[in-house]
Image (cartoon, rainbow, N blue to C red):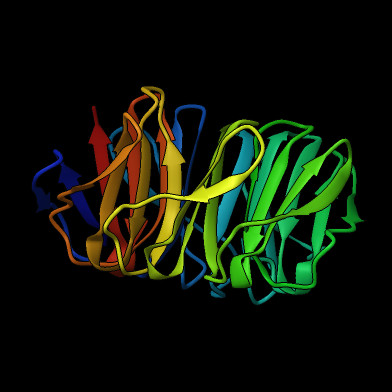
Length: 278
């Protein structure tokens, strides 16, 4: 059972009960997918959610796919799953404690994990890459096949360009838990203590949002707005260079946000799923 909340920007109404905590959300084709703390994988087919057997009860934290027949899900216990359009299969983890996955196509996929480990999938096999850091990495975002960011503990940010990873100065020691880049000169990272960083053409700088608690997810939509979600149902929206709080109607922690077009979906504890169609 899901705690699905229909969110209009000021209030939300619960339609059903609750399930496991949901950690990741991703949209591909006409489907929206979510993954959870008990190995749950769930697919929205336009009118209802369906639980898809994953073959594991281990936590899943992140998912990404290039199409409806090429979807990856990962979890920190070493779980890596691949969806081929009909079933999930288990794959060997290319990094220890895999925490996040992102890509720009079926042959350009990156996975990050503990101790600075990063691997790239070239369409056939996973290839270990030198990250330039020994810090734990919590999130990765691929802008395209040439530009990828990963973030992690103690303010760690690494950027892949020209086939090589380089450490970038973040100006913070706070743990960074999520990253999103619209393009090379417009990227965001969020994390502990309400930290929000913005990268312009060449460097990262902090932004003021009023948030003091942990932010778990960040994503931009097709209107140019950027969304951040976090502890106790916190949702922030950035427009015209300013962050503003948006009522979510829930006090459940929100762990990831995904935007496709103008539709925004966020997931969190107690099986919470929030939809926002702008």
